[in-house]
Amino acid sequence: MRFLLTNDDGIYAKGLAALHQELSKDADCLVVAPEVEQSAVGHAITLFRPLMVREVKRNGSFLGYAVAGTPADCVKLGIRELSEQPVDLVVSGINMGGNVGINVIYSGTVSAATEGAIMGVPSLALSLDTHRDPDFTFAAKFARKMAAFVMQNRFLNCLALNVNIPALPEEEIKGVVVARQGKTRLMENFDKRTDPRDNLYYWLAGETQLSADEGTDADACALNRGFITVMPLHYDLTCYKAMDELEGKVRDHLKL
Image (tube, rainbow, N blue to C red; front, side):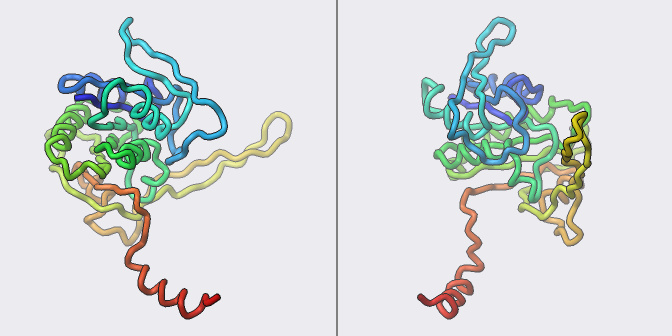
């Protein structure tokens, strides 16, 4: 099997290294990842400049390719150009910090997995819910289990699974649940500053907060309760429940 590994934290990120070490036990793993951190770039792709690619080695051995682009760029290049054989699974991560709720839209980690699904390859996005002193050991082991699960369930071919893992000791994790995307989002504020030449600039800050009306079946709530969450994602953004009413309103009020 050939797995394509990527992330949005950059090719030298510890989470990616842990993922590569564990998944290499079961598959031939090719790393194609951004050369620098690309957190929160969403599903951006590069159109107006060339994508520079360079080989990366670890301990003298070939590891993969560093790309001067986004996570979605890496998946496109990895599948179409850089892998000498068909890719069976795209795995993105292990991200430092959870990817839940509305924040999923901004996530480069999740977007890399979604790009894999768009290209017809089953995909995983994996995140560890902490930004401080992460221990990726259990998360990497669980990633291996998830990869095997996806390979055994071919109905997942056109889906991306967004997996969030609590930053808890293994014995304190309560289980695994399938969760829906909730409304949790980053509550932004901007730190207003002035540079030495008196030019004004702003630094985005804030923290992720649970929505007041969040249901217990939502991803962030389950993650906070100590469960690993698995959320199926699809790139179809259509709001189907609004289709019929919208069609009637358009027909009645927007006649040409």
